[in-house]
Image 1 (cartoon, helix red, strand yellow):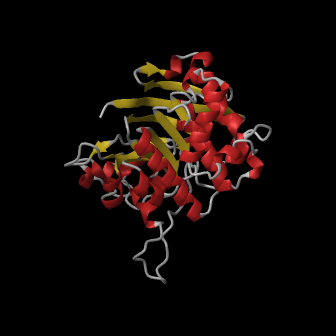
Image 2 (tube, rainbow, N blue to C red):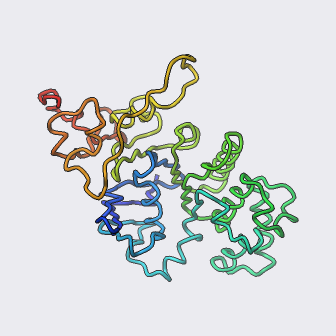
Image 3 (cartoon, rainbow, N blue to C red):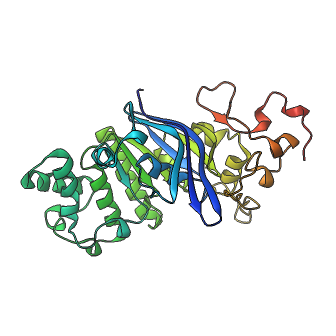
Length: 333
């Protein structure tokens, strides 16, 4: 498959009173056309900042894109002016945010909010934009769309508002959809419905998806590849089957152990990851997960590991010294 998006060595910092928060540190990944890629990790791992940096939505100041490259369809997004980026946002790249109630404009009808991008990016007239808005509401499963386009966000339930957000994001038929925890505030049944809508629309429209989430169950159902982030870095990447069936990084294994399973006994407790993430104002010199890792070695304390490819796979890699050929020569801390 052809590469749609390529992120190389992206580093993003925030200048705060206490110093420089290194929120994203040398992150690299790509997304192929028609592919669904998940970015997972606990809060503060840099997932949302990475996504918002791709869209150039992080406020500057206090943020700074220190280095890196974001190539979308061969075009360097980090070098575009704000006016040029406005032609990309909503047109070529759509985004769904975590909370639809704060993302939707309460003073505009949902129809006007869908039509706004169509008029701006697709040069549609009012009649054509209205017909497309009705079509999009119907595609995302909102009943009686001819009447609902005249209503305001507060007249919709949480699940319906998220469907409206999906309709807005996909109205211009973008090549890439970035979904930043789109089901966080919804109950489980509505989450399943929303993800099914996204999966069906991806199949119909051929849109690539970057899904940012904590829910590994959603990842297993929707995504093709998984990127695991910790403390602003990519610590493991692979297909969803490689990540779920053969996790190589201790952090990834910890995430999977902390999830409830259908085959788990009632009295069998979940195993949380001990400790807390490092302070990204002063990140550790070595592996960021070292202080929480049962397998830490002397080399982990002072040296940050690169991504090591997993034998027998072209897509699976993890940033762990245990994967180094000489790992068995090291003495555990």
